[in-house]
Each structure stands twice: as C-alpha cells, then as structure tokens.
Amino acid sequence: MINFIKENLPNVYQLGLFGDQGWLTAIGQTLYMTFWGAIFGGFLGLVTGLILVITDTNGIKENKVVNFILDKIVSVFRALPFIILLVLVTPLTRSIFHVGIGVNAALVPLSLSVWPFYARQVQVALTETGNGKIEAALASGATFWDLIGLYLKESRSELIRVSTVSLISLVGLTAMAGAIGAGGIGTTAIVMGYQRYYNDVTLLATAIVLLIVLIIQFSGDKLAKHYNHK
Amino acid sequence: MSEAVVKLENINITFKQKKQIINAVKNVSLEILDGDIYGIVGYSGAGKSTLVRTINLLQEPTSGKVSIDGLTIFDDAKKINTSQLRQQRQNIGMIFQHFNLFEEYTVEQNVAFALRHTKNEKQKLLKPSEISNRVSELLDLVGLSDRATNYPSQLSGGQKQRVAIARALANNPKVLISDEATSALDPKTTQQILQLLQDLNKKLGVTIVLITHEMDVVKEIANKVAVMQDGEIIERGTTLEIFANPHEDLTKEFINVATGVDDAIEKIKHQNAVQNLKSNQKLVELAYKGDSTDEPVLNQIYDKYNVVANILFGNIEILNNTPIGSLIVILSGTKNNLKNAEKELEQNGVVVNVIKEGKVSD
Image (tube, rainbow over all chains, first blue to last red; front, side, top):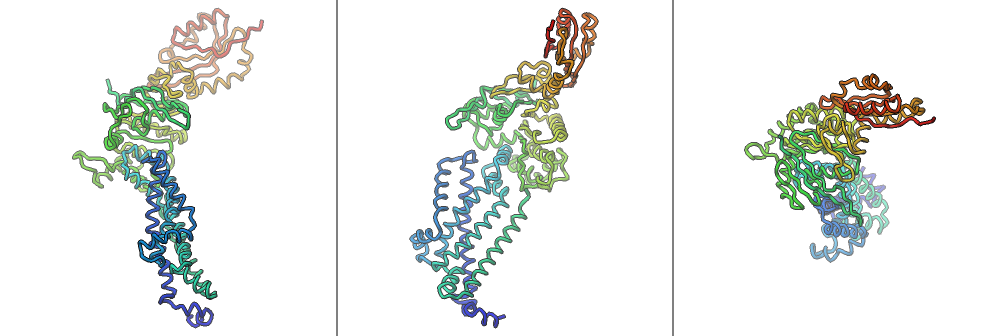
C-alpha cells in the first residue's frame, strides 16, 4: 500500500500525514473551521430565522420594524460573494484575532457567510409549522417559550435537512478560504496541487472533500428521517 | 335559569386591507347559556369564525365587550393581561377543521401540551405522574387509550379530531369552541364526532359553540342556532323554532339543503304532472311541526272542500322529540275550495308555500 502510494502518488506521499502540510493536519483544519463556523453561524442563523418568523405579520410577536430591518440585513449579506466578504471583514477579523489569516481568523467570514444563508432556510422551515398549530397552542394557554419550543420541535426534521445543506455549503466555503491561505484541504489543493502542478495532490484533496460532504449528507438524511413523523 | 357562560356585546371587527376596510363582524351581540350547544351557521366569509374567535381572544374585536363566565376579558380595546388571558384560555377549549395536532408529538404529548401550566388543588403545577394520569383519563374519554404512543400521521381523520377534543378538554373548560370541526370528515365519522360532542356536553356539562356551514350538523346536536350573513346575525332562536318557522331566506335555504327539500323541488319540477300543471292545481310545500303532524289535515280538506292532495315528497325530522315535517303536494280543486283548503291548513298550524300555480289556459 505504502509502496503503491510512493510510486504512483509521489507528491501525496511527500506531504505526509502530520506536520505543517500533512494530510491529517489539513483535514483537521477543515473540520475545525467547519465545526466552529457551523456553531457560530448556525446559532446566529437559527436565532435570526426564529426572529424573522415570529416578528412577521400575524407572528406571535409581530413587529414590522424589526422584521423589515433584519430581513434587509439578511438579504444584503446573502448577496455578498464569499470571496469578497472574506476581504471585506479583514479589519474586523484583525481586531478579534490580531491576524488576518489562519484557521481562527477564517471563522469570522465563514460564520458571517453561513449565518444569512442558514437564517433564510430556518425561516422557511419554521414557517411550515403553520398558523393552525400555533393557534391551537395559544388556545390551550401556551406561553411564548412554549410556542418557541413548539416551532423548533415541529420543524425538527426540516431543520436537520437545512442544516445539512448549510453544513455542506460551509465545507465548500472553508475550501475557498483555503485559497487565500486559511489552511485545510483547500490550501493543500491550491498551494500544492494547483500552484506546483501536483495533480495527484489535487485528486486526493478532491476525494477527501467529497468524502466529508458525503458523510454529512448521509448522516443528515438519516437523522432527518428518524425525526420525521409527518 | 342558567347563566350566560359566553357574553358578546356589540362586537365589531374591521380589517384594513390595503386601502379597503372590511367589516367582518358588525355590532353583534350574543349570549350563550351554560350547557347550551349553540350552532352558528353561515357560508364562508359570513364572519362566524372571526366572531367566535373573540371568545378566547384569538381575534381581538375592534370594539365591543367579551365576558366569559361573568369575567370581562375584553372591553373596548382594554383586555386582561397576558397571564390572566392564558389562564382564561385554559377555560375555553377549541377544536379546528384541520385538527391542528402537533405532528412531531405523540398522541399523549399532544394532550399533555395543554397541561403544562395547569395547577392542581394545591395551586401547584401538575407533576409528571399527575399529567400522565390526566392524559390517560382524557384519552379514555374520547376512546383512544390504545393510541397514546402513536403519532398523528398514524391516525384517521376521526381519530385525529378525537385527540384534538381530548387536548381541548384537558383543563376541564367551561366552553368548547368547534370551528368547522366536522367539515373535513366523511358523513359517518361526522356522525360519530357529533355524537361524542353531545355526550361530552351531557356528561361534563361543557357548553359548546359550534361553527358550521351545514344545517345538518346543527340539526343533529344543537339546541340553539344563529344564522350569520355579511357579519351580522340575521336570525336566531332555538333549533326547533328556526327549523319550524324560519323567517329569513338564507335560513330557509340552509334548512332546505339540510332536509333535502331543495333537492326534491328541483327534481319534482321536471316531472310531467308538474310541468303541465292544470289551472285547478297548485304545487305547494306544506311545513308543519308538533301537534299538526298528528291531525289528518289532508283528509280534512278533502272531506270539507273536496280538495285532493297528491303527495310528491315528504320528510320528517325529529328535533328535541318534536317532529317537524315538510310535504310537497299538488292540490287539486276549484278555485274557491283551494283557497278555503289553504285557510284550513293554516288554521291547523301548517305553513303553506305556493311553489307553482297551474296556468289558466282557457
């Protein structure tokens, strides 16, 4: 096996598993960025999506001003291409991490990019709960937090589905962040594979990203199905 | 004398849609007494749902006063505070046309949802064991004990509505609002659900407000009925009064659909005997109730005036043990005798509606 790699994929072998440019290091960085990006961006997105739904017309806390402003912010951030956002938020990133680049620094644009994307999808998922159920809950004397719980539980399966989509798109974004040196599989593919014409490295990088995406998709589908009783 | 459990006074509800103002409910007052099954009938858009939603303030009136069981919960834009309102809502159950069950909750979780803020005799929140006892009690009441751990998607329409009823009754409400609760069900299931509502009314004494577009439903279980049109109640009374002696055209229309008379008239109009009605003949509808069904009035008009009645259609409904009948007949006789026969019928409490008179050809 090792010999096969040595002979046929010399550059892949040369990078090794550990060390600055090792494969496992790169995979670890990609997962690190995906995970924390999902936590921060996901939390922001979930809250934003919830607020968008409850402040909407006939929502449980109708508020046209908040809804309008939040809706526009989400739309604007949704419209920004990631690569531009990356550059745009560099000053903010520097003020937080004192560096403009690296796995931690990349979390700022990653979270900011996933947030509106996820918020919109959460909004759609929650809206499917429908006014009827909310009305029935209200009629039985439910509190505000009961209703929030109801929203989340009723759309649980749909939320898992949209989280899967967002997570996959986040993996894609980490690769793009890698293009400007954030680290991870993206950096490996660009710096080693593309710039040094190490085609075997590009191929393996592709295969790894594909595998990560497939695992996320598979687990997401399984979970969503498990929690769906509709 | 029983008390008014629901008292709506001068309720107005207006919606602003773009530049249009829609008066959905216009100055409606309504009193529903303890133990009533009160039917509110009207076509969609008549405002019945909007009106009834003011009872638990799912819809706030633009103006007017809402009192439940003696407590004013809304008076000209002043309403009780949120936590009081929540408590009041426990006192008012509601079921819906599309059941509105929580699909990711099991049957027992659906019912338990309504018990989250319920207090026991010691004014403490129910313990999990108390909740589960109450839930099985309620599921027993609606006959679904064996379905406790099922999800709504595993149930039939009728079963779903039973779960919704159990959820609505969880806090022993004084009032149960049924918003077209049987409209999505097939006729047989409708009967079963109506039967259940009637039983619950008798067993628990819960007052029921029944919104429907079918007089059939009202006929089945309601003791009182109000007919709504364009945001107003155009006619109201006991079910018996309304069925026996409807005044408004819309009421008559609803009743005729429910009793099948409308259908019958349409078919009868195509019959030869009716198409070629002779000059000494009249096609009439005879409506009667109670005692007049016991008298052989058609015999009387033959004996006295020699007027022959040819019965084309007959229907008898028994409401609160009182028969209410409707006959469609062709009366034949001389002009004078026909007039006298009609008078005789009316003296016997029969309402005579002339549908068609024979053409005077000669």
